[in-house]
Image (cartoon, rainbow, N blue to C red; front, side, top):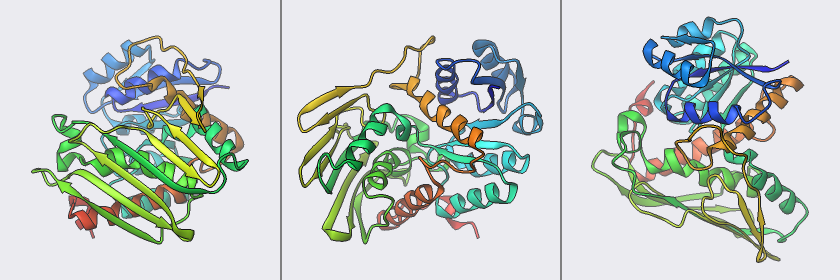
Length: 335
């Protein structure tokens, strides 16, 4: 029986996710309904993607009895409210990253999932790319020895796009881009909490971080250096250095299709999409959908590939980095 999806929000990332689902067999994945805050937008989206039902509110989607899991593609200040809405309706949930605005909100979502006994995952799609699966295998077999350092940069001039620059939309380099860097850090260092977090950078005139540089020190003097920016075009690659060599993730490291191990390059091409996509390599969103189906079929409430503990630690690190940079959102002041 197919996993029946509901799509929450009719924006660009929801379009790409819906297209990616169509690269999978319809016997495994089916889009049942879409909801937007405006019925016309939902109907236009439904027509474009051949989705049977369209709703003009998220509440209507939450009440649909024929949905197994809801994909939430709203801007992240709304992740907490929409996530809790669907969980209370006993819907499993896949929420776009960043999971929430801060650690407090992440904990609220985890508690809601536990209270309502539903599956819940942060949509860190990179975790499930074939490159990432191969990377974990190589690390486990000691291909480059013990990892000692990780260096990654991710940035582009994006301040002209409101959701990247506006504080009320949860803008800023750390929340939008830093999560890609940090999720790799947790893979490489097995979810270990860093012994120290040092952050520097600058804020733009809207009050969000324009560029942030994080230095994380782990036990045994292991280091991770992450740079993210919404003002600068960076290299957008990554290098893992071990005691026996290195692994490179060339651009685009946030959705990789190439892995270079001690100078030897491996390619992992993505399937062709049937419709134009908004973002680089978005056909790769299919892999997180496959992970969701695997988890649901096994009766799991969280994904072994993207556990709640990793989502919490990412939020904790970003909270501390924002504290050092002086970036405060309205959600930070909620009691």
